[in-house]
Amino acid sequence: MKNPFVFTAIGGLVLFFWQFLSFAALNLHGSAQAYTPKSGEIIGFLESIDLEHGMYALGAPSPEERSDPGLQEEYLLRTEGRSWGVLNYQPDWTNNMLPNLGRGLFMNLLTALFLFWMLKGMADRSTKRRILVAVAVGWVGYMYFPYSNFIWFKNPDIWAHMMDATVPFALLGWLAPSDD
Image (cartoon, rainbow, N blue to C red):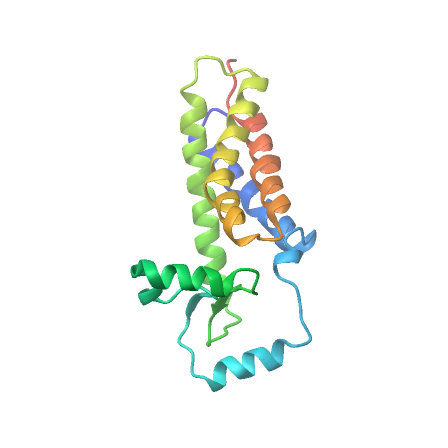
């Protein structure tokens, strides 16, 4: 598969299909998208307080507590051992998945193209080397974002993200151009 356009198309589709498997068919990320019977009650409350859309760190210090050392100490003492959470509030639900799928596919194609470019430039393009380098690329992305986020926010689907960084990238490394 020496043609960059063929590798980009096939590689992008491999990544896209893996994401479908990971998030939908196999539901590996189900723990991060869990249902609660209190969902309606929570959404109703958020609507009633007219919360603006956005991402919120519930239990985080106020701007004043962040900037004043005395207030920081008081905040730390007050919140130690208490509950906290992360809220991503979007008041306008839409079932139109096409724009998101399109952007996802575009990013998958771009990822495959960049990976092809990196692998094509290697002196040693043995199968083992291609797979190891491709998985290393996947793991760099994993360590930089999902795992760094996990350190602070305890995302429950961290193992699914690790699989996302390993399985499809190993397949792309196997499909990449060889020394032949």
